[in-house]
Image 1 (cartoon, rainbow, N blue to C red):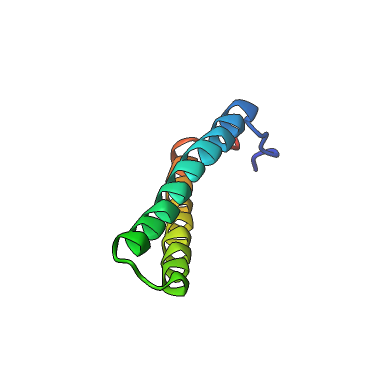
Image 2 (image 1 turned 135 degrees about the vertical axis):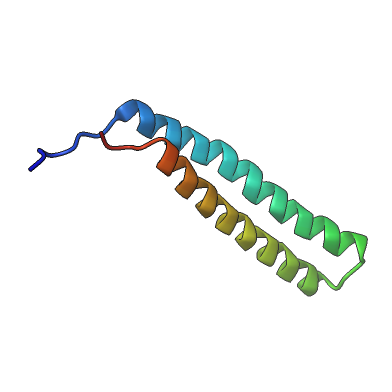
Length: 78
């Protein structure tokens, strides 16, 4: 039986930094895409806000899948 696993702090700090950087870009870009699409099509403000929310949530979903893959390639525990 293996002993308790230790946290690799270097990998953890890398994962946290990537989550902040990629998360900001992915969610921000998707939110801005909803805003731009609403403005480009001259939609009602409530519909435009709805697009922003939908695109923003899709950015969070994409971030989840990205982080899941990043943790698989950069394991936190030894």
